Image 1 (spheres, rainbow, N blue to C red):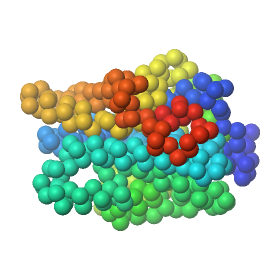
Image 2: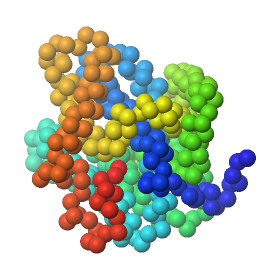
Image 3: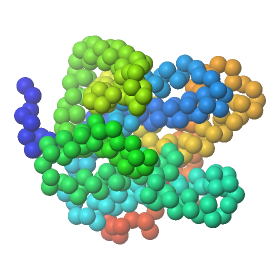
Length: 367
């Protein structure tokens, strides 16, 4: 019997603790791993296809994943928010806001070091203008990190709002055709509902994952049905210029976003149950390292393949560059761990807001 939709159940209830529920944390990490691989795959495949002027089979995978790729990432990011949201502002901001802003600022500077000069056309004034603009206009692939800080702050500020009202307002933002040209505004409107749903429905999502693991045949049947429906809607033109595919239509995109997010939860739970999730779990545990650093091996791998003339099948080439862009940051993170360059992926103590933090150093590593 379903749990009644009360304020308590919406707030997330008893979210499993990391220390007492390693199996459940395992599927969360596996789900994060799936998401980060899909994100890297999207950037790699579309970039390579644009550079070559043609497409491959990986473009179809990217199109299939489009309805749920980012919704699931944000839903997972909200899962453990209930455990910290009632802390005082300084402690909360240290964990959920400053944590992400540190990495955003650091990696904006790193990315500008590699490509800022070319982006500004060699004009120092333009370079400084573009760098200053990153404070209000999330830069490149780093917009996800920026939005996590914003979502966390907004959710803390609105924690006294009725959960049902908050959820309805967030859903209305996603449904509304908001296209202002501002990444901050547009992505907030399109993604906040998934983050807040992860926070409000955490208990139910964990229960859903447990049921998927307990009933694998039923879960597989549900995944097959979802795959067919998602594929049909993702690949069928809508005839509406603003929403090219049926999957992008208002209301449809919201439903597919949640359906796809739960599908990834099911897949991660099943893989964990079958002891097949280890590589994905590792990617999920270090998802922030992959997300921050994949741009460089992605660009280098693409340039190398094109220079050597090794791009035959675009799909195969995109898969190879995706693998390189995922693995290289993991190697880099392992190499710098515990060294002077650890600051690339671990926020140093001078940047903590809590000098005598109640948070453990491990929490400062988490994404």
